[in-house]
Image (cartoon, rainbow, N blue to C red):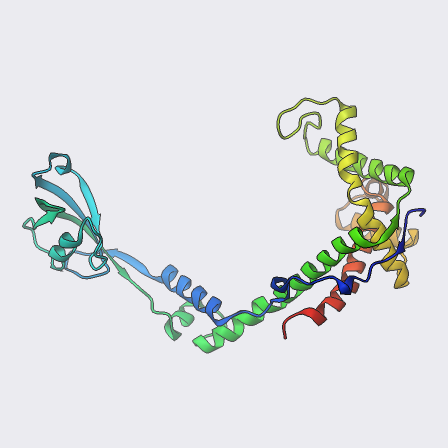
Length: 305
C-alpha cells in the first residue's frame, strides 16, 4: 500500500477526558436501580375500605358554585398537599362512606362523590425485594450489590478503554504525518461504495433517493457514497500502521479460511460468500480490532483505580 503513516504522533501525550476513565459502579446507582425495581414489583389494587395517604382517589364533582366544575372528574392524592386539592385530600382520608363529602375547591364550596380508590401496595427495598427478583442465590441486598457490580463493571471498563482509544485515534489522525495516495484512496472508496450500494439494493432500498427525499441519478448516488466512504480511509491507514508495528498481517489464506467458515454457518457456497465480501473490507475489520486491542491495553493505565 502506498498510503502510510510517516510519523505517528505519541498518542499517550494527548489529554484523556476524565469522564472516560470512570468505570466503577457507585452505590447510588445500585440504590436507584433497587428503588426502580421496588416500584415495578409494587401492586395497585382498587379498595373500598379506608383511604390513606399515598392512595389515589377519583372524585366526581356533583355540586359547585363554579359551574365549570360540575360533572368533572378529578384525581387527588392524599398526602401530596397539592395546591388545588389540599383540603380535598384531607377530607377523603379515613373510612370510605356512601355519602358525598363536602369540601373546598380553591375558594369555592363543592360536593364530591368518591368513584374509585386505588391503593399502591409498595414492595420495600430490602431482602424481600431481592427474593422476589428470583436471581439465583441473590436473596439479600448485600448480595445484589455484589451481583450488580459483577454484571456491569467489566463491560463499563471495556467501554472506557474503547472511548480513550477512540480519542487517541482521532488525535493520531490530526497530529501525525500521514501520506495519502489519492488514487489509492479513491479506489478504496469506490470498492466500499459498490459493496454498500449492492447491499442496499438487495435489501430493497432505492439508492437514488436521499433521506431528505432528493432525487439522484445512480451515478450521483454512487459518487455521494464514495465520498462518504473515503472518510474512513485515513483510519484504515492508521490501523495498517499499528498492525505492521505489531507484526500482525492478514493474508489471503486467512481470509479464504474465514470465508469458508462463514459460508458453512450461513449454508451458502464459498463463491456466494466471496461475492458478498472483499478482502479489503475484511482486512479493515480485523486490523481495526487489532489496533483497538493494542490501544486498549495502554488505555488501562489511565482508568480510575
